[in-house]
Image 1 (cartoon, rainbow, N blue to C red):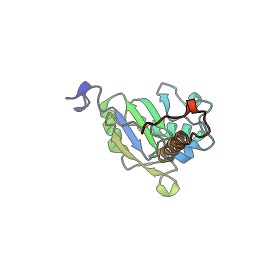
Image 2 (image 1 turned 120 degrees about the horizontal axis):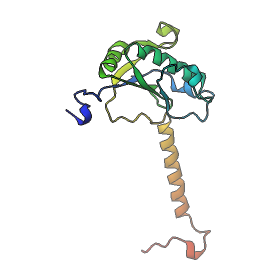
Image 3 (image 1 turned 135 degrees about the vertical axis):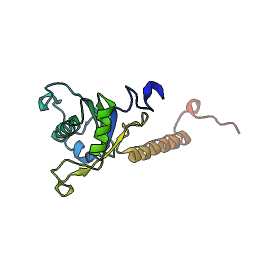
Image 4 (image 1 turned 135 degrees about the horizontal axis):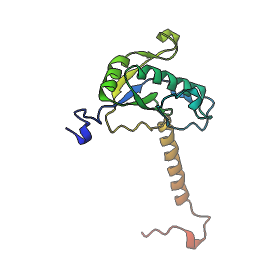
Length: 177
């Protein structure tokens, strides 16, 4: 038994399902240059499209509705989190019971989501698993680009440090030889 029964699936464990390939991150960012990395919706009675934030893109609201509809067939959904900037199109769903989460993993793994009844209609084949308890889905889509930009900034700073001829003597870097 792990902490809080996570390993053995106790009362608090194995209630969180990860749906990969649920959406195309590029489509989620269209028209939203300041898109948040993570959007949360609490599942409550009477929740509907009117509960969306004004700055949510229509695609996000539609995805949340579809995931809520599909997942609620397996049991009570407590929370849906869409990671709009994750490269794998990740949606995390928290269920009230481990049984509902297990039924969801079995029922949705390999199922098509979005765009009608088939992949030809734009549906995406979902990869449904339990959350491992440690994976952080807040990773950005442009992680490679960000790493390259950081390296460039560091290189520019290094060049600036090395090129100090224009500075007064008292501000120049002193190197002992």
